[in-house]
Amino acid sequence: MNFSLTEDQAMIRDAAQNFLAEESGSAAVRKAGESESGFDPAVWQRIGAELGWCGIPVPEADGGLGLGPVELVLVLEQMGRYLLCAPYFSTVCLAANLLIQVGGGKAHERFLPPIAEGRLVASVPLPSGGEDWNAAAAKVQARREGERWVLSGQCPRVPDGLAADWILVPAQAPGESAPGLFAVPRDARGLRREALRGWDATRRFAALSLDGVTLDAADRLDDASRVREGYPRAAALARLAIAAEQVGGAQQCLDLTVAYTATRKQFGRAIASFQAVKHRCAEMMVRIEAARSAVYGAAAVAAGAATTDAKALECAVARSLASDTFFFCAQEAIQLHGGVGFTWEYDPQLYFKRAQASSHWLGSAESLRESIAQALI
Image 1: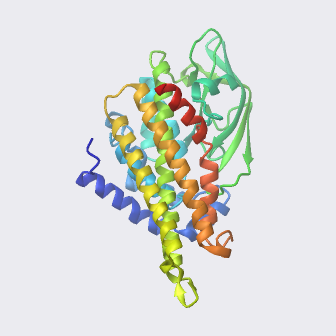
Image 2: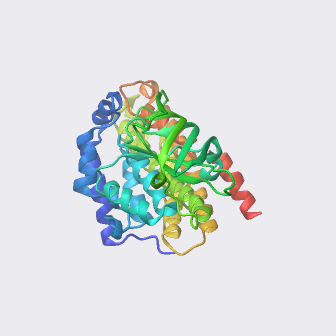
Image 3: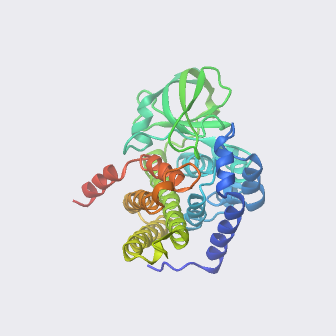
């Protein structure tokens, strides 16, 4: 397999790095994290309208760029590196992803163009543990009443759940073997949203309660012929997106550590010159390169004609390795920063919190390794 980037892919990566280095620096991340919405609307508008990143995975027929998982991974790696505070993950990597894999043609026409243009913020409840949306749908029940659908249940973890204009909720209908996908507007009667306080202030979550939410027939978005394969494919691509962010975060932990140890002096010497510090930074670099290779390889598989099971396996491997790598590099960054490593004024604590939080999204590394072992053995 050829892992080298094309000239266009390298330009996408470099453009993302330059933009985010300027617009999502430490001060910007902290300011956005303390704001009411959790992100800067001006930056979000530029991402959608000016840069076109929201349209990367969206087909050209639906107003997007029609690019693939490799290009998306390159942008997400830089977003993770700079801890971008924006509803990109929830809107593009979850909502648009599920629509593309599970939704029917009318759902595509209705939602994908405004998502690609950055005019619509959407989200999807994250499943718990190692589940995908097939299992998570049991938490929300859908029943039909005439030409309408009524949803009831709980969605305990929804990224950007307060900012989203629409929540795409997988729900189980009686007598159906696979869950349907329903579009719930933010002002739906019977929908209650509550902000959740978590470790990671750079990504907001909300808990949703649906108590008899009534929807029109057109608000059911799934194509019955696609749901069985579509949900696992969407979960695999979402795990790949998380892994790409984690690799970027791990890289920034290394960069911050190298910069700090080059200026911090003890016994009249920069501590970067000590062999023990060199060895620990080298271990971080080796792990990052291995995780990045796994993520890029999984993206190449996901972009090809592999089976759903093969894509799911590769993305689970990448996500498991990236999660462990990010956590290792974040804790090493704190240790090698010494006494200031865990203080609010320095950035390693932001990455440590993201590493802790993201390690549980769509399965922990342990649960994913168990699924990998079951698939192989």
